[in-house]
Length: 481
Image 1 (cartoon, rainbow, N blue to C red):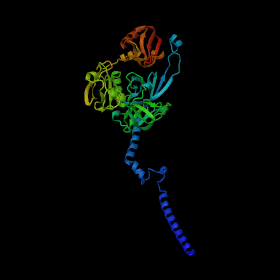
Image 2 (image 1 turned 180 degrees about the horizontal axis):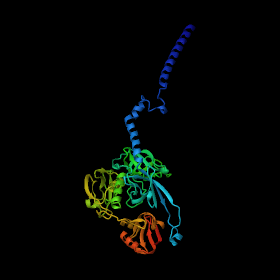
Image 3 (image 1 turned 45 degrees about the vertical axis):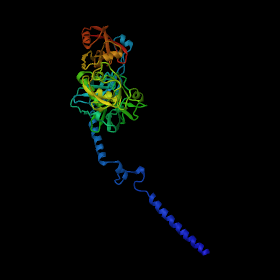
Image 4 (image 1 turned 90 degrees about the vertical axis):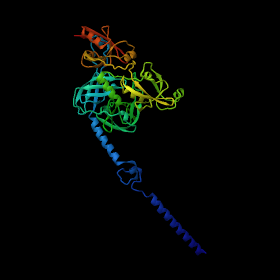
């Protein structure tokens, strides 16, 4: 009996040992580390990595890398560093004695993009607004003084020019064709770090962030996560073909430095503004003549709408283009010239690319019907005519007649605006660009022609009264010799 028990115990022990060995072998087989088993060590250079083959296409990756290099190399040469100087107004004692105090200059900086070989440069209006001196440094380190050709606060775009030729140019792309998710490069001079290139994707289009408080402001920004910082303003947003698709303008940040969101003016708006400033001296602003809103539950119920796509017309201007064409309150605008419209900024952008007198096809939904209206766009006064502003250099400054819109905004009936300043009497006494001259020696100044006549007959002391676009009233005095 005892022998049998020992035998049974031995057999059980052997089976147990055998079973344990099998489990151990199986466990080791599963737990044995493979070459790429640790996530942190997975290498894109390992040709047998299954993850590598699922996540990367060699051909596409190589092309993207090549295009980034080529685009950056081409674009950097056409992006310039802009430095500005500002002077505060002279105090009352300086005014009484007929001359300014010696006040240190306030300095600023930004970026710009060369758009013609003969020296035209586009930048942001806020980069050069009210600057007394503008200095441009090229990629090859040459430095030039720049003059202001024109400004458009409504889009935050300005055009300046330097006396140079055979300059590298950044070609215009097409911002309407830009896609969300597409790679872009931001090129500029953040923190005075010249010719800095960062990369990101287009995060959104048609974005309004309410940073411009100007009347008729157009905010339909390209949003990107390419890092931009103070000093990038006015610089280039470039696609991987090396084409200009936007002008970097603003960041959304709780600290004032990059926090993941940047915004650029679409280049199709830039092209139109620049062309107007060169040809007419002012922006030819076109209007559809409607008040519109993005569709929400309340408006959908109020107007019995069948869709949430597009923008709903909540008002029609009596003498506007839309009313003349037959568009009504409650219509939903879904396209302009066949291009879809889903939000108000998109509509503003598409209309903003046109001039008064241009014809566009506006597609609307009225109930269950889709209707096309041929609309002849008008200006803010309900006219289809274009406005040409005469400029003349006097006293070291360039002037232009002010618009009816600006008169209404400031509550004034007349005035002539200082566009930019060079060396001369006005700059010496502290006048800043943007100043609106209303009276000279108590004589009203209603036009540039009237200004010329008054100045040509001045002798002795000169006393100027006027106002700045922000509502600040100012007075200046100097002597004619």
